[in-house]
Image 1 (cartoon, rainbow, N blue to C red):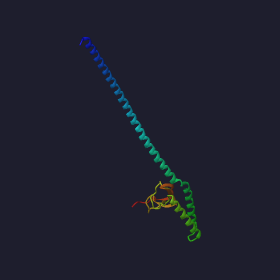
Image 2: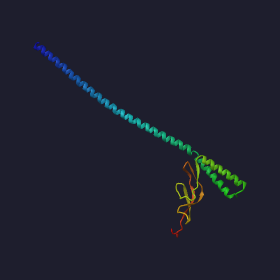
Image 3: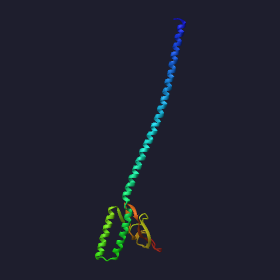
Image 4: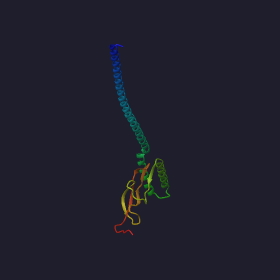
Length: 188
């Protein structure tokens, strides 16, 4: 082979090698770009997945809260009506106290009172009967203190007005008289 053809062959080989090198660099650059894009997409997918999880959790919380509100609305919808009815119960009790046992009117009122109390119980409305219990400010309203050295301090000795709860929520506190010790009482 002649020198010029060797030289041409060498130039050609150099040119091919240079193009291969540039091609590899282009491929390497494209691979790097693709890897960067892939990483960006993975991060975005992770962010979207996190947002989705939070949205689902928020949705579940809202659903739970709404179910509780619906349940409470259902349970306590009769509250105003119940307050009116317990006032009627109080009036019937007062009439029964005035009338004598054995009087037919007394018996009729007693039956009507018991019917109202039973109907209230159907809706979760219960009387608070705290005589002999310790005073609880969550359920009772103390209006009078009475000296009683026989009972523990703060024991309910009389109920002046019946209290009521509705589904374990206070509807009306019981107005009560609580015991106190006399000033010169000594604890033995």
